[in-house]
Length: 406
Image (cartoon, rainbow, N blue to C red; front, side, top):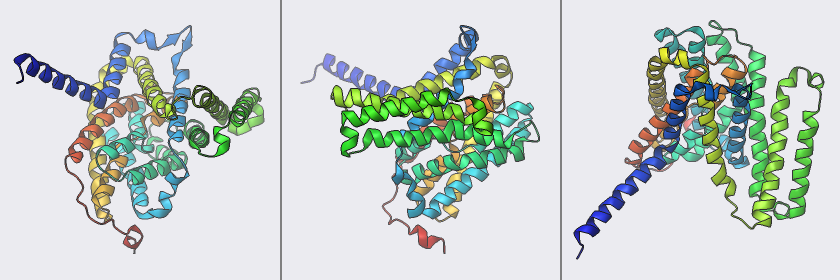
């Protein structure tokens, strides 16, 4: 017979389990709020270190995050464009039309200052982010479709994002199309390609990927190329000089990945999924630090426009989910695909937007919108995913997407 003490212990255990589940679900958001609060109360701690402006860390941190995204991808993630072209095209079209235009409309309606308004347009003009893949999984959506749309919009972003920024935000602030395009290649595309290479090194089942000698050679060669790039004069690069930092970091991270596998997996016989456990922590810490730097840099302005920006974030994000879902419905996609498209359209790559704002627009004010929109998208995405998860997709046969075009 269970005693009162045992029942009390069991109840306390259940409460503790619920608290732990809540923390795991919203850990990222909780840490973001902690960093935002710290940067608002002690802005000097996130502005200068040893006389160096911490803004210089934003782009390298974004490159590391994006490299991590690349290590989770492989060639099969891009085959989805061929195997299910219709839903992928719908997702890309909705992503790159709804969000930029809604962002522009909200920015103009709220009457924000030009740089803040440009930041809202910017967050609407970038590609979807990796968080949308996780939310799609939790929402019982079509995860392969979600990953394919994220990958496709990311690789299209160097051309589409500058186009919308020049078209919509160009009337508010100066926008250099070519510089923005090259900056996205530097921050996003090159690190992703490096991540794809690292994926082959880390997860390949072939013999060469499990031999100490080959891993040592790969590591030494990649780090050597990184050093060579670092010593190359910028004038040799010409108009592509902006890509130098990305190429350097790409080679360096490939070399570090190969060396880490050599030590952890080969020498120490450690777990093969060590990268899967490490990267989420590194990414979360990097994003929190980026948001704290941006918040500290624009603390005074944030105090005056913060509530309005939160309202804009909720509106922009909610419209994205709504129009993304029903746009996919109009495209005759099934329920799981509609949920995936809704997440892809509603959730943007806040890191990319922050990097562009700092690196190209040279404006911490323009970076405010990504800093606020990003955490909110994770909260809203978690809530929507939880709601959808309680409503399982009916077991209907998959639609023949190729036939749906005709």
